[in-house]
Length: 276
Image (cartoon, rainbow, N blue to C red; front, side):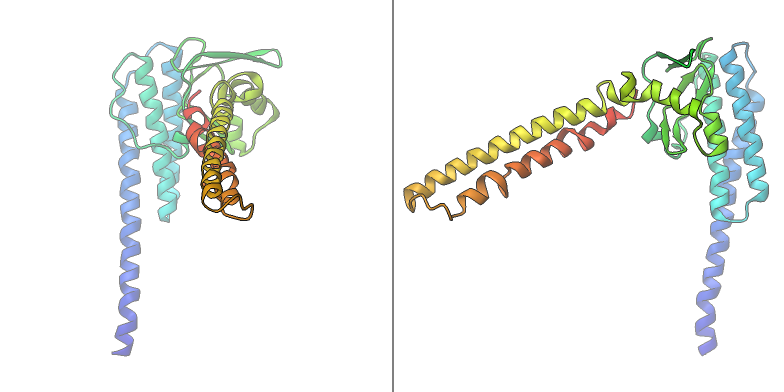
């Protein structure tokens, strides 16, 4: 009886892990097979953007196949599933470039929401070379990226003139050239991205408005309470009017500080909505 009581939980645990592994494998295979079918059935097209998107989709298909062959854990099957979803995102981009219906929405990729999307065309020059980003495919922006975190930096989904992020994807770290292009396209110092009305303006206006509103409210409450104390008890400097009204509980400096960061700064601004 004692032995049976200890063997049963181990048996159930082993069966549960086997089911989880089988489910993860089937989920990865489902997206992998869907990717292969769409690549085979979609004509290559004539536009450079279409051809490049299908090349990238084919690379993800081959990579996902290799991951599936080597996978022995749930996590490894999840990585293969993610690679297949990336390939399907490139297929959707190819369909958009061909003027076709992109099809149903896909599950979001890791880091995709955080990275946002390019919402307006932009062009910058870095070390004598021009780089472009656009929300739409064109002859001068044939390289699509579905969006995500690349070596710690959010690269928005969109169409680009050069695949400047690929080195960081392969090497796991940004080279000097890729980092400069990223900063030029999306950093505040170059007049775009987070600084062009997103992070900085959200932080500044939210902080100022929240601080002023909270400070004024706290001062008003402090004055009202001081007047009440003067009428009822006389102006006693040690009573609750000083602490409660202006600077602590009722919203003076505390209210301004919280209102600035939460009402319109880091939280309310949300890096300008995640889009560029």
